[in-house]
Image (cartoon, rainbow, N blue to C red; front, side, top):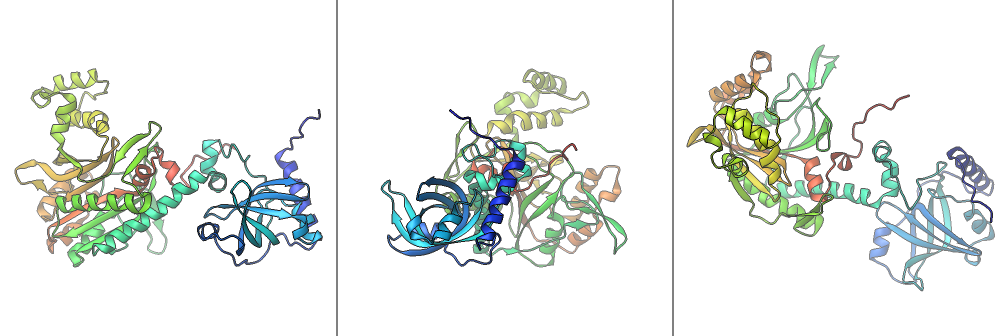
Length: 484
């Protein structure tokens, strides 16, 4: 028995170029022009036997059988089987089809029918070469297995992995339905600068750039918050922005330096009005995009249920649930000892508040699996929010947590300019240049009571598509340079 001949990548390429030249000599131009067609999803949805259709797509499989062959092609909306038979085409057209390769784009015209195995199929009466692929696609049944290559060559991942295309189609639908929901609630979409004179709205390390025309250094925004609040001062009452933020920090399974955020602000609102938005928008996304209220999340296939209302628990209460009811009566040293016993690392310089925060981040938050609002956060961690009326050491905010990860914060925003200056001053520390004086000035012109929230869209898409790695929901994530 003869051994199967395995060609190298370069040999495959040369064979495809030979096929392309042969096709060209037969009158089939390798790179065609526009081709009016019906999308394959629409053909499948409106399928009628004997109906004549025109379709186009990339060849994904070819099965040759003497004087006939079956093939499948895909156009991004779905795939469809086509049937090529020698006596239905001109001799030249049938011969030329034999020089096509996987990955080539073709347009076809023909009749719809159903095979003996029940497969809807296009019986091809004419075909047109639209584009020749001279690189060999990844092997059909194994797809693109190298995870890093999937990120670097996303076009191959999308070409070969239907689940990847489906995930990004869902991402697009999620963005569309977020806008639909907010527009339906009377919100106006706005845009604020991505290049700013100074970073504000969060505590993060920015990317720096230089504006040649203005001859000054600028930063890529770490958050749009302070500009959006200026718009509330100016008279907008219900606004949102969907856009990019940039933070020059680490990359891991849930963080990417360039990420997409949704920020929402509502004049005359507060934390509760933001809570109502979350409990309205998430069910809307589940119903319109997923068609169900539950998500199978991660490798463990954990079932997340987004049916409202969602649990609400105070920050101190959830800490006591996981660290002991006596946690806040412990001394700093006793708290540190208990935290270490739970497997945490504690810096010797940390006070009780910082030890508690570490316990919340590493244990308490991770214990919250179903959608949960964690409220009444220590004010030191949220300088842009109002304090609780019954306790000035806490702020009137929530952290919305799902599957052990924070999805978004929601605030009763601080509109007192003196209190805001004091909080930002504490955050700036010894660097007064971090103070945004124009923002403080805008508050002195008067900002109404306001509710605000910010959602990481990448994490939201991860949650709703059951994905645990952020790079799987970003089309072109940042990657390390390849060693040359």
